[in-house]
Image 1 (spheres, rainbow, N blue to C red):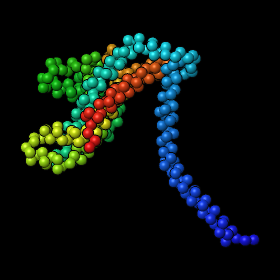
Image 2: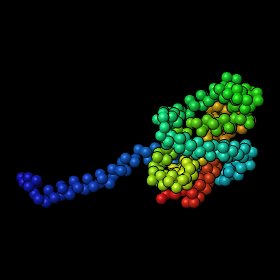
Image 3: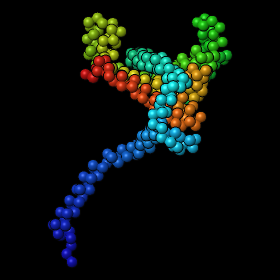
Image 4: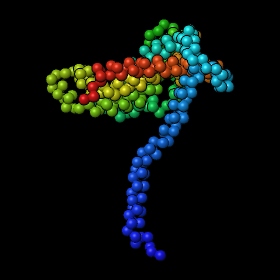
Length: 315
């Protein structure tokens, strides 16, 4: 019996098969790396979204079973509900307070940290420290800081005389102050990550541009306005978009601290989805509110991208 290895044709076929397998592995390799995250994304993002959209077009019983297809009736009904309109107004009000501060505060911290001075490393670490604290832990910390009688904020306001009878302010139970209090909490919890992004962007500003501006007599803030901000505008735009979505979809601190109160003053769109869809088991209404909340946030995001080319410099 002849040895196949002595057959040039068999060797050629075997070599071709090996090359084919290597080429196939090379083609499939990136997809194999992407497969786990793709599977999880489909299972936990796209599939729930599609199911939520189907629920929003249907009547659903308390067991989560579709009983009837109703088309757009749920959408017509939800826009007639005063509580949902109030939730939209609360979300927009929160975003209007939160987004500018969520961009400006970390930018100022990045500008401070970029200036090489004594103990720079220490306060850079302090600025990034909120990243290490979870949302729930941060909320519990601020619950004590904002306490009516033993909170440090009321104590300092009282000592400074900023607010008359300041110890009477019940921050999280007062319809006037509850939403601003949550704005403070959300800014603190997200400031660390945004600070790191903007600090990296500020440090990448070409020094020759800053030196040339200094030779021409430009002040520090003139250099920031004319050079630093245009150069870091892509990072600023990214932070703006992410914080806008975060502001419009905020719900965590509300669930932990205020439960939508007082008197609905902190009932945001996503908390409305939670309270109607999960707490009240009205899955059709909760799903409809969820899709409407997504569309509102998506429209605002598209509005940002519409004006991207006017204010963002990629050169």
